Image 1 (cartoon, rainbow, N blue to C red):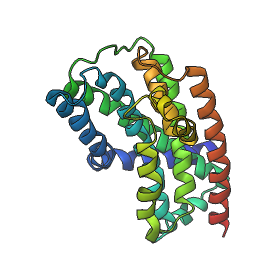
Image 2: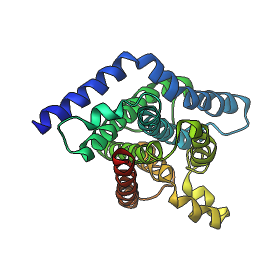
Image 3: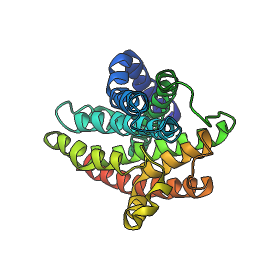
Length: 256
């Protein structure tokens, strides 16, 4: 009975996401697309950056697409459900344990994060042209980073969505998302921060760093990057931390 209800909720959210696919794609890939055009196409064409810069940029753009999609696909509906729509009350009345409602939200975020990365990859490849050192031979590693990365950002989205009010949603982008993007090693490899050691180690609290570096390890291994075991270990730890606080916040909001 529990499994039936859980998968019914999951199918409903997947069906809604499929029906709103054009809006989902606009919301999640528009910003990465602008960065692809400017940093991956225009600047190399104008000679402001070397052509090989795209080798370091592509994995970061994929990580950014995954992160934005996963976090937004959980946060925005959660803010709406707990805010004006009150739809969360219907879900809480379903005959399943309340924590499973949170788990279902995170799974939806994982799926949407993976779809976003999958969509952005061929678009980036088409706009940027040939990517020196790009390979798909380490697909298993890339898949592992994608899953754990999407899960981490989905859990973070659950935490944010069950904490902030609808009137504070703008703060999420200015205080959380923007710093996360620019200090997430999306446009530069982590090893490039050797010149600024305090920043190099400060950014390690940012989960986007590990997704970006993990993507580089799998897709462009010639670029200096964090080792994959460190990346996966860090993502697992961050996932556990985010999920613990997210579930606590969700239960407090749901029960209250």
